[in-house]
Length: 244
Image 1 (cartoon, rainbow, N blue to C red):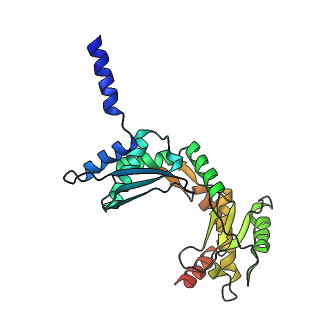
Image 2 (image 1 turned 120 degrees about the vertical axis):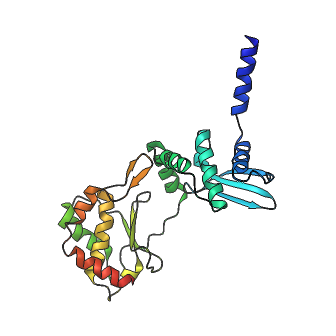
Image 3 (image 1 turned 90 degrees about the vertical axis):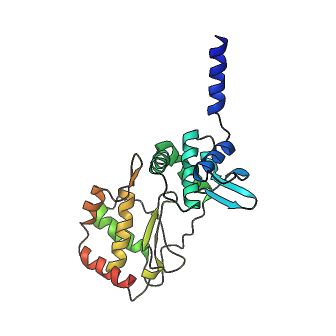
């Protein structure tokens, strides 16, 4: 009985690791011939799920979002593998990438991240009235035409600077639709602005679906509803010309 008890305690001791010990072990798996540097772990109050690792003369410093403080050891191990793979410019192990995404996509974790973003994140919203277009007016017209007037108006605004990368986005954490300031010009046809705003309104109507480790941003219902927009092809061609 004593021997069995001692063996059980020994096994528990082997499998119990501090975050620093676990991260050092992951480092050895990636760089078995390199002496393990000093490992430091900081849980930081970030406004999102991002985490970082830095390797310099002082050692390895992992800065991990405090939302993951107390997460299962397997999740932290997967995050460590992801961060080390990126640091060393190696492929991220598929098993760890899927395990980590699945955990973040869990209902409770998504709710926690949304609350963190709401309380810590800053959101610049210029207001709906631009130099050429008033998003509040266009929103109400689209609301009546496609949503029976039932959609509550979120925060509406224009981006700080024009960009050719993203024409618009919906931020569920702050319930805000932001359109690219590039579109706020008399040289841009109103049809193009209407389509981008309509697209972002559909994100309110059809939220992102989470299926295990996968995120489905544009669901089948979303795509079917988008086809109801008249002159859809023409609007997309206009936007392509604007961004080229």
